[in-house]
Length: 127
Image (cartoon, rainbow, N blue to C red; front, side, top):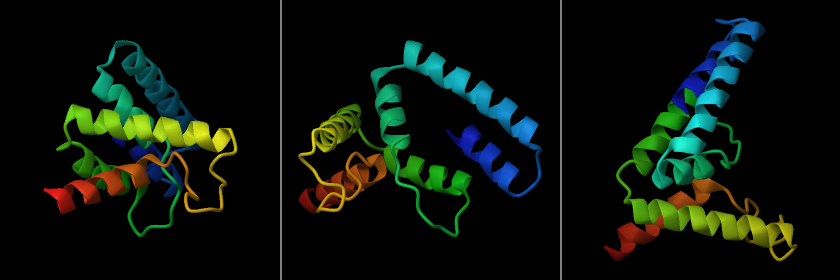
C-alpha cells in the first residue's frame, strides 16, 4: 500500500518517469494479487477497505495519508476489521441496488476510510 502511494507521490513530484511509475505500479499490482491469493483474511479485509477510500484534498502526500490510515487500522482486532469490511460490502451492494442514493446520507457508500472512522469513533465512545 505504502509502496504504491510512494510511487504516485514520486511521479506527481517529477522524481520518476511515467515508465518507472508504471513499472512500479505493475509490480505492486502483482504483489497485491499474491496477497489476495495467499494472504490472511485480515490482509484481504484491509485491502478491501483501503482500496475503496474516497479521494480527498489533503496537505499530506498520498504516502503520508496511507501511513496515517494504517496507524488507525493496525491496532484494530481482526474481528473489528472484518466487521468494517462486511459493512462496506453491504453498503456497496445496497448502493448498486439503488437502496442508498449517492447524494443522500451516505454520499460515500462503501468508503472504507469513512466506515473505519465511524467504527473507531463508536468504539471509543463505548469503551
